[in-house]
Image (cartoon, rainbow, N blue to C red):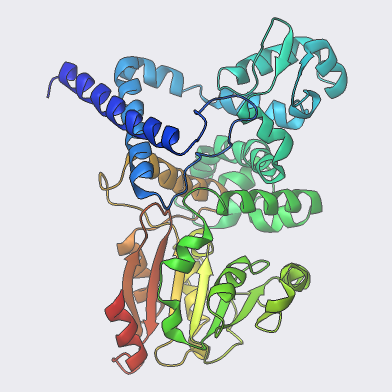
Length: 449
């Protein structure tokens, strides 16, 4: 198709879908979208409205394609090559607390902001005006700064502030040194030899261990992960509503690496017959009970456990991992075992498993090329590259998960990956099948999926 006809096609798509959303907003009394500081921080239509969300996604992808066509390949590559400067101006705004020096409902001069932040006025102007090109802050009249909806998040949303700090201060140097790490440690899949460890000069000590040494850094990491895992497409409601949990009746659910148990709380509220054990590091589980609603405390218990060691809870019905397996590389260069880290985690379950026990992984699943829209694919593949930067780990596709369970033990029967519309995560599922045949429960649930 000629480029001109594609331009017309894209503009027609954008016009049609925008009209659909505009009419929906008008009919339901939803204010027009804007960058004003009091505008909604999120798209103001719930993910459950499939029609409007589909229109929105269509617009996002069509406008991106139209933009790229009009900019052209050479200019796209030219300016992509220094897009790291977007991170720089955002990092500066975070580090110097610029957003909190600007009144939410007013404006502040560069002189006033400089005094409040300790950042010299010349560099303040340069960095803030660069951030403005990303619609972070605005300059209503020369010499004065006011908020946009984006910059206001850096005042009001503590978890987003942690996310910006983690990505710009901790992760960005890791990305900058990932090629260095690949040159220094060719083909390494050890977490202590990743870009993060090279950047921060603690080679041999994996990221999580290093961050854990600093309470403030660890606290920021926790807040950032809460921001990500509660973000669009990652909401726990997709997990709660996207699997037939009720068919397990009074099942015991083991949440391995489950932090403070937010998944178990969400499931416990909807499935009153289920019982839960949240396993994590000792410091994490020590705070866990205080995060659980009192009415659920008799059904949600906490237990310290290292998931590389044998699973202590035997004969449970479900062993669950969320945001865990993607932190694991394929190959563990252990002189004695030479086992993959992910395989080691699954093998640690085996002594505790009863026939028909479910292993459920709630994580990203890489799509086959050209099978999902570009917006989602960019996010998921960026997550994959981030795992490389931080831990020499990876996201996996469905074939990779098949191989992972096969390597762990042929008695794991992998049932595949599935997701819900609008969700950016998948459920990867296997059943422990030591006799070569699934139990009646396994059959009945599988038929419903």
